[in-house]
Amino acid sequence: MFYELAASSWDQEEIDAMQKVIAGGFFTMSGNVKAFEQEFAAYFGKRYGVMVNSGSSANLVAVAALFYKKDRPLQRGDEVIVPAISWATTYHPLQQYGLKLRFVDVDLHTLNIDETQLEAALNPKTRAIVTVSILGNPVAQDTIRNFADRHGLYFIDDNCESMGAEVNGRPTGTLGDLNTSSFFFSHHISTMEGGIILTDDRELAELCISLRAHGWTRDLPADSPLFEHHGSDDFYEAYRFILPGYNVRPLELSGAIGRVQLRKLPGMIAQRRKNLALFQSLFGADDRFIIQRENGKSSAFSFTIVLNPHYQPDRRRVFAALKQAEIGHRIITGGCFLRHDVIRHYDYEIVGDLRNAQTAHDFGFFVGNQPHDLTPQIERLRGILDTLI
Ligand SMILES: Cc1ncc(COP(=O)(O)O)c(C=O)c1O
Image (cartoon, rainbow, N blue to C red):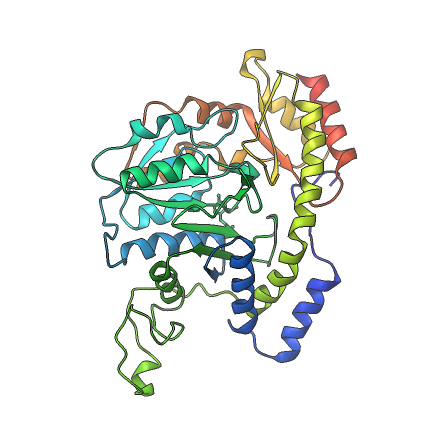
């Protein structure tokens, strides 16, 4: 394909890291995962990192942890504010834990939750807000942290699409009570599959650690306040369960690759941003195309285009031309979530209307970005769209 949605960011270093694990013969979660968790948390200035086997699992474990807090746990029937555009597994854990969703429209220019509607989204049952920075573009995280603090809400920042993005010098995925990242193939760093939860809260971190592996106590520190120690009776301590948990542990291979990828992250984001600068220079000043307005500093996961409805564009014709030119394209992060059949399984309300999410769904798409120079690809994309719209 001429212009792919994603490409590998690995070289011999990742292969060598895997070979070392293979030579050691120990594959289940151990020292490499632990080291990666510490390095990743330190990189983003957080106290705790809990690695899991995907970004989706990170969201699941994060939501579950809030249900088992000692103080003010979430309860079934509580309500949570969410944006109308995000990935399916941003929402699914909320449904699975019996929460009611309150959908807020996105801003058509940032594609992130429209923060001017947050107050209108509140009601006495609202207990949490989940946000996402769409495809690299930072959500208004300071405003959301402030809003959550004023109303006593938990804030989960699903940062699975925007590792390394920043607002006011602060990385996204650091201001939430719990913050999640994905290390899937196309993402800013890739560990095959993988994800992580970042937090500064010891109780939440230890809840995540237990929930990640069977709900047992084995991986918790000896002085964890989550359970009472019964001394040195190893027979019972070895298989001791305190929470209804999962097994979503990552492999040592993924931990080892993550350590290599993390060292490359600044360079990879710099290249992604160079591609973004070219994309912005070619599409930014042309009102036929609505591209994402950067809020702070995007980490440029990919490039979104919403064809300006004013020109009555024929998106199907555009898609046919992109297919012919071998340019990969997809709906923006799954589009408006309420347009998917799965919504019939959800308990939800819409705050106001979702006209921008619907516009992005009907007129938008994204093309890939990669940590490689994409000048010919982006220029060709521009040429094709210029003749079609
Ligand atoms: C916003 C968001 N959350 C969660 C996920 C899930 O991550 P994973 O594919 O690692 O399960 C994705 C995946 O792309 C995502 O875009």
